[in-house]
Image (cartoon, helix red, strand yellow):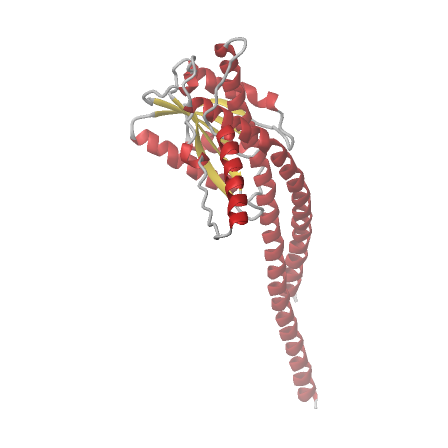
Length: 319
């Protein structure tokens, strides 16, 4: 039963692989929870920083930082955040497709593109397909430190300040949920003013013809309108000691916070994608084992039937 022996060897090999993928699935699930915690801890800071800078970009302060000034785009920079390791499904490939699509649209308009690559997978990919890489950062680990990113980010910021690039984009994965990670390409520089419509509120009250209830509702509406005026986006900034120094530091800190948050969020995406990929691999291994076991049983049954037939035939010949 040489065929049966080969099948048993294959089954044993797949079972060993299944144990490995199952263990990797559990490890990825544990790491994903920790990565999600880091992502959630950093979100309030990044979102508030984005809101403050958006308001500044929408206002007319005494000093307009270079990051707020739009100019004709002749050269664009892309910071592409990928993973350092594989076995995470199509996470990186989908990101590269989105980034290349955005870059191709730029190049079709005659815009030159420079790249800052974060993660070993992006470095390997663009080394094979080609690209003008000006900075590369890798081996950030599961708990990335801002200090490890500053070098690559500063290269792109200096290029923007010196006029070597006219726009800066960030390509990374957004963590939607455990099952879904979406590649996103967003503009970092020049800063876009916040959409004032997204900050507006629309009150729609229906009052019943009761004096007490009507008065209560009117008072509530009055208080809400006063609070809304206090919290409206028409802020008055006072810069101390100097607007130029404060905004210079704030703009750099803003870009750093956005890139760092993207790296942390991409880490959560990586672990979620790896967990799903390993779960699918484990399930597929189980299905393949069942199919091979069925083939083995059929082969064994056929061999036994053949042996019985030979015995019966031999006995008949003797008799």
